[in-house]
Length: 384
Image (cartoon, rainbow, N blue to C red; front, side):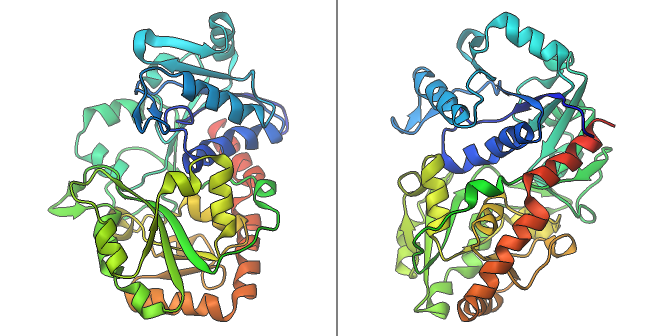
């Protein structure tokens, strides 16, 4: 596919102006632009925007709109965005007539993470693509008969999933889920940065409610993390650091984690904006991370967009097994584990042969996550 297309990408860059989420969506937008396509960013989540300066939901969207424009301007896209503020459905960015013309002539809308509030309102676009970045949760909600998510997903023509190995025990939904993964702008993760002697990650303790399917509960990261809470003692003197947000939990885990030897830092202070997040990743020696319980139990082959950024920076990742060994090379650069003993062994292996693992990490990013490769495959499937 060599001809230029007009493509609309959705996301939550303005809604949650935080470093990791920004990179998640931005690498779709900028990656498609680098391929030579005419790309527009559209945000219409129906949600009130979060303001990290005020520490809660903002009373207006001035901060969020300024952040969005600043981010896209860095990639020459300052005139290619439109944002809907839910109060009175007020639009910013493109003028109304330009937004209408853009949508009427677009070849494809890519709804990343299902962030679009009412995708059926965008049927004037020739093709709508849904990107499921939360496999197992998505499929269980659909199979359980949740009408809102069924309406959302069914409004699209083609369906992609970060669950690259979806199968039993994940329920069927009536959709053809096409495997995809996070695109990475490799050039954005180059560059020498002084490395701290610490394994890090950026995470939420919990994000939303667990789901149930056939008598089994599929949970969040907090459930999995408790299995590895004594890991610092097993790998000392290696230091383990969490840029941790408590998320939607009634009891803070911070004090318990610190008592067990974890270094816990504020994720907004450590990696709150675009450059801060990248610097945090690149200054880390490697990543150690758990996955959501549903990913572990359902084994969909999910691989974190955050971990892909670590790989691109040449930082090895020691990450919990979700079945991704069926699609990605494991052993060097990516070290998977299922038990606390395996996690400790993986950290020691990276420490013992760091240069080899670092080189392998970057090569995996080049071979498997390069935005030009990932997005070209996505477009070929979406525009069939």
